[in-house]
Structures are given as structure tokens and as C-alpha cells.
Length: 141
Ligand SMILES: [Zn+2]
Image (cartoon, rainbow, N blue to C red; front, side, top):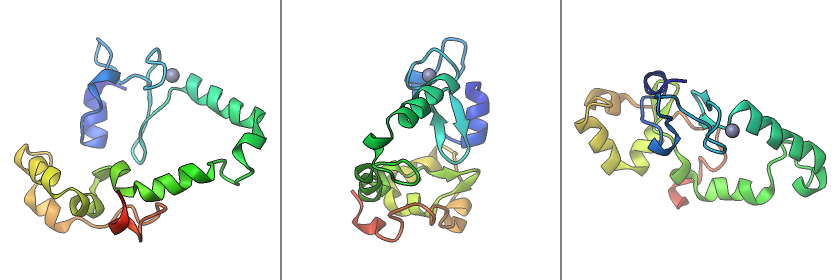
């Protein structure tokens, strides 16, 4: 995906380290192949890294403790603990109220640089309610 396509979809700039010379958003893991971009999750590994990772999980089921979604418990707990720090400002095209609450300063900056309008901030809704840790996000790091 090209940088401009990414910005149009996600409404924020990806980390510069994953942008190739010809303006393509590259895989954050191998930087050899274009990244997969998901409007919900942002930048994801390329197909090749993803397959490698899937194969690894498939071939090492015991390491992953048999959790139905194959996410180790520690990572699940971390996701809760660090809810706010992994929070994305947008979901699809919708501005996240969780983000505004957690990052008032950054939100102010986004208004200043025109990423969002004051109106959008005022109208923002909670969009990450389905994420683990949502209800305890006030205790998040
Ligand atoms: Zn890759």
C-alpha cells in the first residue's frame, strides 16, 4: 500500500522506518515486502511473515498454552494493562473517544495540524469497547 493510501485509510502517518524509497508501506518485520494494512489494526506483517508466524504457532501448539485464539495469557494481560498505550486514534474512519480521553495533548495537536476538527472531537464516540481492558482503561499504563 502506498503511503498516501495508508494516510487516507488510517488518517495518521505510519512510522517512517517502514516507508520504502518509493513510498510504499513495508512490512515492519522484514521490510522486504509490502505490509498488510487493516483499517482496524493498522500496519500488519506481510503475507510471508504472517504465514511464517502462523506456521510457527501451528507447529508449536504447546508453547501457546492451548488458548482458543492462540494468544498467550501474558500478552492478553499486557494488552489490558497497556490498553491506552496501544490505543489507535481512529477505527476505520472514526475518531476514538478513548484516545481523546487518554491523550488530551495529542488530540489538541491533531486539531491544530488539521488531522481532525474540534467538531469531530466533540462528536467522537467510544469505538474500542470490544477490546480487552476497555472497562479498566482508567487503570491502564
Ligand atoms: Zn514481512
